[in-house]
Length: 193
Image (cartoon, one colour):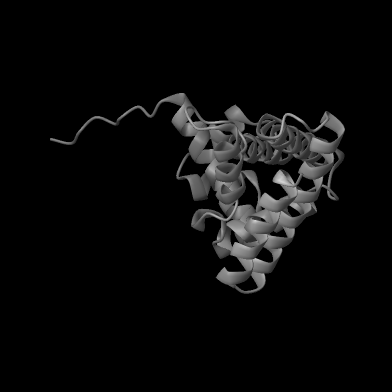
């Protein structure tokens, strides 16, 4: 006797849909994202995608917000470690193997280019970058309380530029020694006297 269908919780269905959006963006860019393609990639009915999201812009906006939360989590302080260790851990997370795959780096390029495609995407991208830099500046300030907030913000911006360059370079060809030096350079920027 066949099993009755298992009801997938609403949150899991939305996650599958958003994961599908990110996968399609990574593989094909914005032109590869449609309601039908997302439903196919997520393995759900088209009606379900339409139920959760009004249109392609809504789909992509929601996916961008997911990436924003992932980015902010990179600089969220962890429990128990000293402020300096928390900062160093956050700076090293950006060079974790999961972020150095061709698929992920390709996705990042697509996300950056989306800022030029639609004003909503640009606003989400700007907000995400500000939140990331703010979290990084807070980690720097916790590790170096002698620095004023403006200096912490400046250092966070400089580190963000180095990290983005590191990702672009990794996409062109993985050079682990250069990546290690880039992470070390970010630590030097953050912790300099």
